[in-house]
Image (cartoon, rainbow, N blue to C red):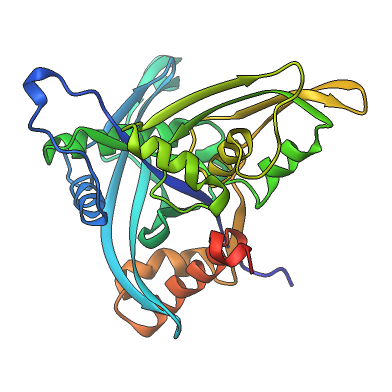
Length: 317
């Protein structure tokens, strides 16, 4: 018999700072977990929504069911925020029945049916477990929607920032591509300031970004003689930061392998985890957040995240 698995993809929570005009100088930058919690809690308000109008359908993205859960696995304890995100189709063009026959028309639904997905925010590590729903994740609309919803919520709270979820690749995936090249001649990546959760090799570049007040850093490194792949040097450090999910989009690597020119773009596929629980049971976690069963589900998800995306200090053991 097939096992009932709750599957999720792991994303890094990036806090993106917006540009502030002279009239917005009093706006604050989101800098703490309390700020993150405040923005997420406000995002569930009814007037916070993101509407996407296509050629034949109109969709509305919203967030609901904000809940805080304290968990403990015997060795450590932390707070997890879980939220239900949903896409509703309020209008659709198609064939409709009329008194005279069939014709092309607009069908409206009120209230519209919704397709939900669960998000678990692991605040200690700024990681997010996103329920894997294929029909909602085939495009990047859901990520775009999180950015737009948190931007609206942040503005309500006087913050000039928003959240972007970036896929955390399978451990070592980007670094593996980096080390594949016999000679690496180009590395292009857009980094975002980490929270930080980095290895010792990336610390110097992180410190440079902090000291320079740099929130985003577009690097396009080139060398016909070959970029250094030595740990601690800028190309390796940038790759480490991107591997941890503190990036915007893909990382592009170009060079030579066994004398042949090669181009690799990587970093867009998130690592996937699973726990041995029925999907509908996990979705009911809000109703039992304070119960033993609810805390067990949360602890299982956190353990799985820690297993597939180990913290830097754990990877070095």
